[in-house]
Length: 330
Image (cartoon, rainbow, N blue to C red; front, top):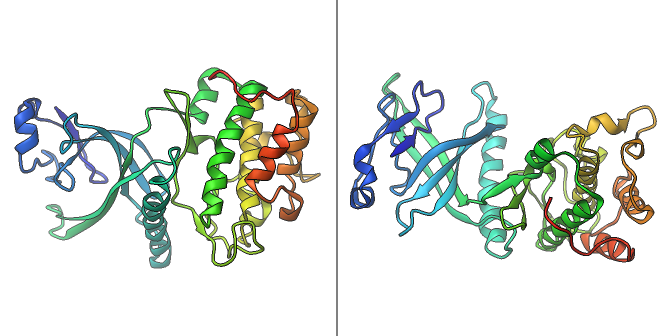
């Protein structure tokens, strides 16, 4: 069996243990250590990282197996890995974002079938043989969604059809309605954060940037100022400026996501005209006038000109009978 070391900068993270191919040994062995850096490999006594899934921002994600389940269920282990050049204030913000993802997954993932469930959240302190100090790492473990992100699907297969795009919008709007009604704003809706499971169901991922509503409802006037964490091209003007965010902030990002799906332009800046401060996507794709109207309102630069709630967008989509209610997977 292969286990991947999660210590940042490990020169040879791949480790092979033939004895772990035996199921009884796998269930009972106390610990395994990286042959290169001495890092503990079995995390929290149960999770075995198998391979790196991705790295960026403030962390790395690994496909792992849970040896405390009969079938060694697959899961995702995320490790907090901030850049070494962060100031103390930036490091605190980064760690708070990581903590926030665990809190939101625990609160919302257990209640909605299209939000990954939190399975564990724990720190790990290990000796560093290179400098004689003790390193501290933070991990969260979440449900593994077998599938591909919308970004991957567009890269592999090109633009989505109008029917497929509407299907995605309806599915994600249902999730956003739940998130907003539970006092949170996602703040990072984009194709790479939407996963289509192999069974066709869509999931909303990456809740590290979630903004908790300070007071009032999610459609209320103020959600507090943004921390400045956003994805360029998908974030609306108020978020990029670090001002208050709203439910309509997420709706704007979903509108941009729909444009990416329809046009196949993964970098939405390509279809934004900075001179007029408007989206210029119509030359690239023709859609039903009803859908075009919905998209234009989602993409209004001023928050109070957009739809205020996900339910309003769903109702607007349903008003156009020629827009399909369901569509075959892309």
